[in-house]
Image 1 (cartoon, rainbow over the protein chains, first blue to last red):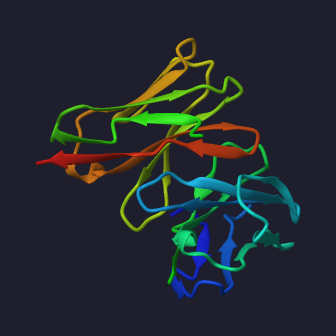
Image 2 (cartoon, rainbow over the protein chains, first blue to last red):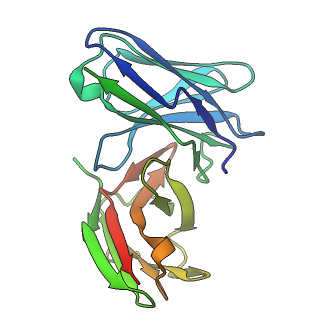
Image 3 (cartoon, one colour):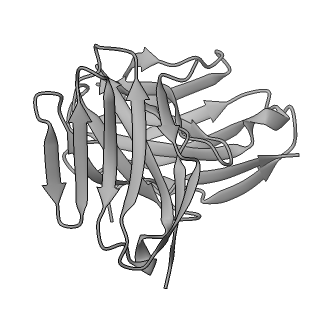
Length: 113
Length: 110
């Protein structure tokens, strides 16, 4: 158990819809990152949040956005869903932005039909 | 462009055998190299990690070997057990993000 919890665990959305995924970070961790893992591939970095601001971003379009709250929990929002957005979305927490010890949650499986 | 290349894609080992997974990188700014273990339907779990100033790190049956000049690192799983059957990912980090390899599916046969 990493202490990183995500919800929902599974969901199905229709192309063009919007989705919000939620994450509670491990106690004491103030930094949250989101990763996308397509089937059979390694996770890809989406962005990181620290002190409620985006602290770095991977190669994902602006329709991927996020929030971090004062209690360090976080949301990932994806607008205008596309079929290729179907993936496992992983939340990861660490003790600081450069904290290399990164712990992942179980993920949210998103299927876009 | 994948920054960390991992091989093999899959491997089968007998119980008690040694599993070896190799990774290579190009970005010399990477300063932290973790390995993650992932079971089907689960998130990646941190297994063991190394920094480039160390050539080898061992934790239980898992050992990382690191060759800075060759920009390569590997995971050795000694005395492989059926419970080790999983997908293993190497990764590399600089600043705030992890770059992952494509993964190796390890199957341990009893």
